[in-house]
Image 1 (cartoon, rainbow, N blue to C red):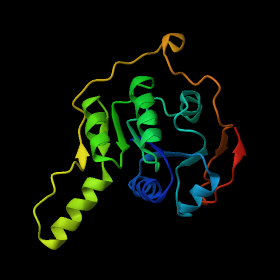
Image 2: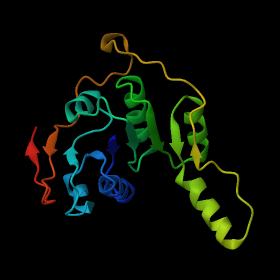
Image 3: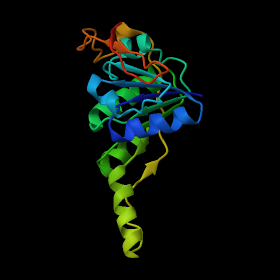
Image 4: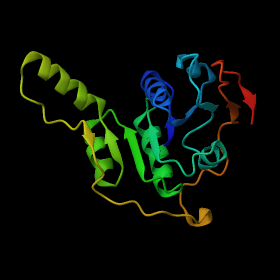
Length: 183
C-alpha cells in the first residue's frame, strides 16, 4: 500500500516507521529537513523536504496514486489544506487530517475530510484512566460530506501558483541516512 504522510513530527515519524516496518511504501514530506532526524536509521521509505499544501510539490513527490494520505503537521489549517488537495486534486480516496480543535474536526468531517482529533482522544484517555465516562468529544471522525474534484487549475480560486517553498528532495537510502538532494 502506498502511504503519503505530510508532517514528520512525533506522530508522523512514528506512523511512517510503523507502516514502513509493515512493508508499505511510505513517502514522508516535511518543510524542515531536520524533521527527518526523527526517522530511524532502518527507515526504508522516502523523505522529501517540501510543502504538503502545494499541489505541484505533492505531484513531483509522487503522491498521486497513493492509497492513503495522512496530514499530520502541527497546524490545523495546513492539515486541512493538504487533505483537501489530496482528496480533490489528487483523487486520493483515503485521506485523514489531524485536527486539534474538536469543533473544526467535526466541521471538516461534515465537509468530506476524515479527521483525527487528538484533543478528543486525549480527553477520553484521561477520562478512561480516571474511570469517568467518555467526554463525547470527537476522536476519529469519518467524512460525512463529499468533496468534488476540480482538475482545471485556472478555474479554481485560491490556487497558489507561486509555490512558496523551494523543494529539496531527500531520499532516505537503505542504510537509513537522510541526505538532502536538490529536486
